[in-house]
Image (tube, rainbow, N blue to C red; front, side, top):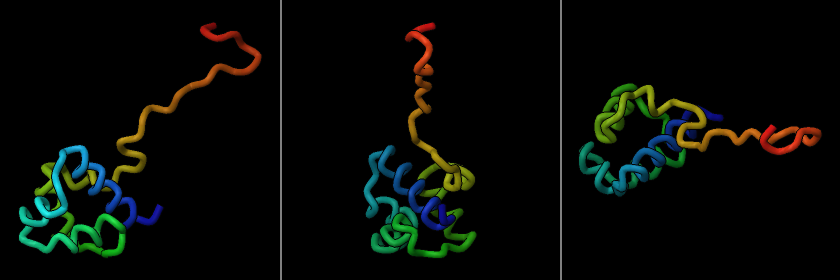
Length: 87
């Protein structure tokens, strides 16, 4: 996945899990809501300073904004077709 899209997807996921609007996060950062929208779509190549500011606004460590497959359910392990369920 493109690093900008990964970053943006994690920003959106964390923001939505926290029940915050784009406008609320933008206000915490002193920016326009449209900038947050662009970040979430992966359309902005953000600076290190912006990464830090976004992480602070979302109350997470910056590294959490770059985790792949974050927020996805644990993979479900299906039994092999030749084994009975529960064996």
